[in-house]
Length: 305
Image (cartoon, rainbow, N blue to C red; front, side, top):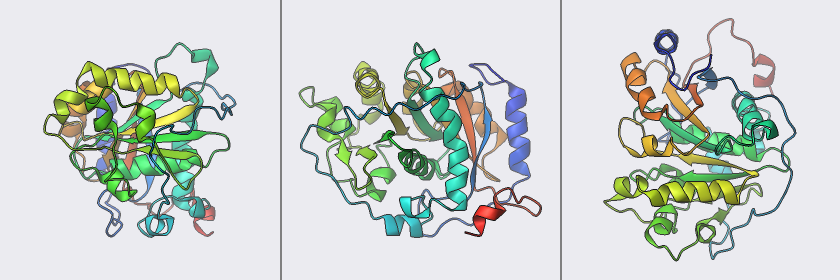
């Protein structure tokens, strides 16, 4: 199905699917964690297969931000995907999620499409697993050979991603927006995963909404997209119905991923959220916390690893 404005029958099908799902147990101590994630629907068809760009240029921040050692053991305990559990159910699920996104992001035949390698992850309301999804998608893409990922925390109020990955006390995207003399490369933080880098939120300010809605933010997104054309860029943003920032960012990204919590997200919330992000030509849905039911043994073999 293809349209920049997803049809109402799509909303109905998603809502019907949600009504049939029961909530999976939430991973303890993980505020944004969730269970199984699957690509449920997409508003537009994705591009054909291509070889990923293997260039290694421009992947290190030139500024003072030193690298960090991610606590992969703790992340894995909390249900996150890490390099150590690539032969797991969650790893297979995110392989299915990432593959069409990567095909579209680096499709040379669609080189004129704006920022196709820039993805925004959001949800309708808080607590649906958007940060959990953003981190896991980044981890999955970083496992690709010769492909780099830049994960950006744009949820200024909660800063869940920055705190979860241990960069909550560093300068970040807000500092770049506030200080014209600061380069975006100054706040890129390398991690112990060679293919993964982060940009924290930076200092919280009261006027974050207005700053994110400014032309400076639009210019920053375009700068990141043009400076790192061979890097997959993921923005973790606030929920659509809780903040105006996602609506602004949707104008500048190539894909929007809307995380939908099984058994929780209502049809009304989906219908209200979609018009706020459909300025992006590609809107996708990930059904989160969907419990596997009897007879669904698609990943049974991998689950026994």
